[in-house]
Length: 362
Ligand SMILES: Nc1ncnc2c1ncn2[C@@H]1O[C@H](COP(=O)(O)OP(=O)(O)O)[C@@H](O)[C@H]1O
Ligand SMILES: [Mg+2]
Image (tube, helix red, strand yellow):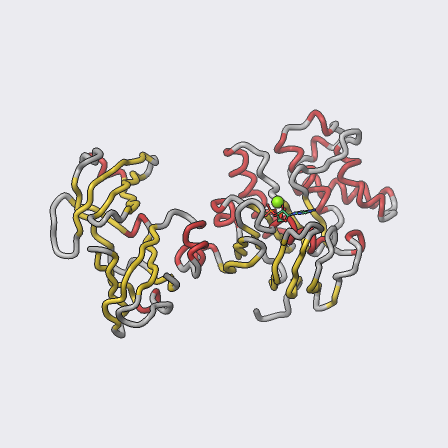
């Protein structure tokens, strides 16, 4: 990173009363103006990370730094960070303008100035016409926007968002993802968003932090995370992946040749940095779209039986079993679906050039 990080978690651990480990030695740098997502399954420590950043939870060990200054012991209200909570936490007895202006009134801002800021914040989220509306009269999407406006009105250095879109239905959710990203680029404010939805994290983030059991599994850009998972957990968690036991047959300057049962895969060197020496066993991963099928055998194909198919609109997913019992998922484009892929059909599976990746630890 060219400049110092804006926010840093430095070896943060959180052990709750009763001994549950929320976070286990998490070190994480967030740069100025970044959109970072914390992604992982339920219970992996996403909310705890956010609460430690916000100051609602104090770490058992480790520090929180903002602009290089230790803010670990600063109260939430004294930190230039704001949180959008999962359930929005709006005040039902106040109207939209009162909800948005609440933080400003705590800060004792003169009324005229506060009014102006509330109006600006509501304009940002496209809710200017609802300024006097009662919160109870608003739709889920509108409440979401009020919560956003309320968090943005104090011009925080960092906006923390805990599953901000999880209560919205699929179409609205997709629309709000685009709006959230646009808003963030326009403001240039650092956004840190918690989500358990990988598609959401992939589509919206500059970087993604994958958490599992309170630990960081990988930090990477969306495309890097998809193309180059470094752990089995990430390979399994992001997108669909075939993870196969394999044996290293040969290592050359171009890459590594491995066998996964009867399947021979040539993995390019840049995807095989984790490969063990020749003869050793390893794990490899291949995306379903990196495999293809044909109806006749040829060089480098292996015979497989189709066990089932799933129609996904733009593509068809084949579940097949190759000899030895290895199961594979294969995605093929719709144009191929004129061919019959009934269960029981024999097909010949080929790996496309440059496919596959060595994961290492078998
Ligand atoms: N206040 C608490 N007391 C005890 N355990 C907690 C508390 N908050 C969270 N935990 C536990 O810490 C772990 C991480 O929780 P959390 O950060 O909420 O996960 P996530 O947001 O990723 O679903 C879970 O095992 C959860 O049960
Ligand atoms: Mg949570």
